[in-house]
Image (cartoon, rainbow, N blue to C red; front, side):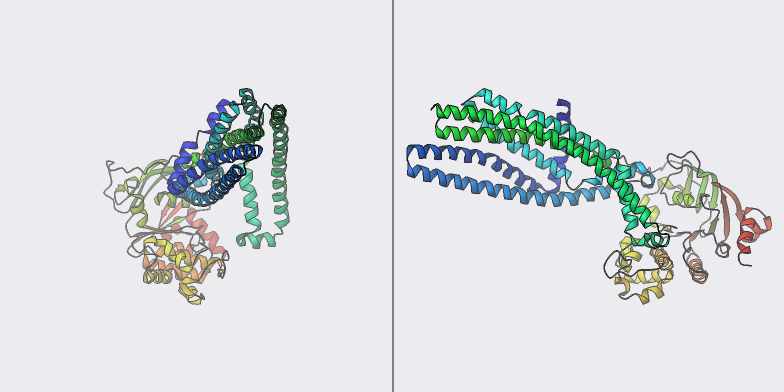
Length: 591
């Protein structure tokens, strides 16, 4: 029990600091109103005694005076409670916004490997689960603890005048119910943590069934009913687990609360008999009954607050564990020997994804000269996109190193490096935002530079698309929001290309299967334009279409994570190796 009480406060100091940073004024207001709400019930109880005594004495003036005093105290108590409700509401809204901002800011600081790890998503899900409510709950429980402790201290002083044994009974009778509450709070927390993966699956099934990106296939294959049944089955299992725990929690809570009720009425009977025997005045009877009842409730509230704080701290541990995920500062290597080669150099580079035994790339040695056009060819899973991730420094090599203009990539400031690279990935994003944002996000610092944006649109081949949009750059894209314009896959792809071309200063252009959704004519236009725009730049192209690949100055074939062949199109065809084999297979499709 005591170890769990210590756990109840484990994360409270850090949570209180977090709340203070979020709203100092709100925190002060909450503290002052809590003290007022703690003292006013004592004033009301004392006023009730004085009213009874004045009535017994037959003093009309004193009776009226104390009735007015009690009315003022009740009014102040109501005002304090209203104020507490208002402050908690505003503080909760402020805190929820700030904490979700912290969670997202932390996500921005994490590496790509975190987002490819299922355990990280479980951790993120647990952190976000009740991030908007639990911190405020910790603060509310802490102040409620303070409020009830002050109130209880006042009632204890009053009751000691009558019986110290009654005070002991008051305290002991509420303990069993609180112990049970702490136990079930712990069980509820463990249950929810354990089923985090299934909880994410439930949300994913809901997303698939109610998202426009999945609607076509769900309907075309008639899989909606099967997924809905899986959703319901998983949801029902969650419901049954929650119901069993809630029923046991409520049952034990009720049974053990009867101890406190029995203790109250036992003392009530003793006090009533004492008043009947004229050992207590009517005013004292009223005061002690109120003190005992309210004191018992205050102590029960203290123990309940401790149980609540224990549960809240368990959930706060999820948030703080997420926020404390170690982030390695990018290593800036200035003392390592460089290279006299300009351009990009892969020196015996190998990479293995976290937790994987198989190498995605191994013993890669390659020199891409400045302003050279390079094409990467290979089947899916050969390591082409991994090559681009390493070049973009989304991952660090497991072994070997990559140099840019003679310097190890790890010696470059990440932002400076990324400003030099314009990249379009195969799985590019379709932002449910305005056309202006979809293009401008390619270079955030130039988000308001409309001339640059229009140039990027033309270079990406989206000029005709822009001309047909109802509100031009201000057109909302996608169906997620009102008045949105839905686009085809090819149109989205042109916007992704335009986004990459926003980086006019980038001297390295990377296209990872960027035209998969375009028809042959549109693809030819894009690559002719890309070829012209990359004349004074280094360009790296991944494509399965050989008419496009043959435009490159040099072609590299990747097989099983290793560089198998390299040369021009004519050289590789004449060699009769893997490239020639793949070229011949694709050529057959056009015969």
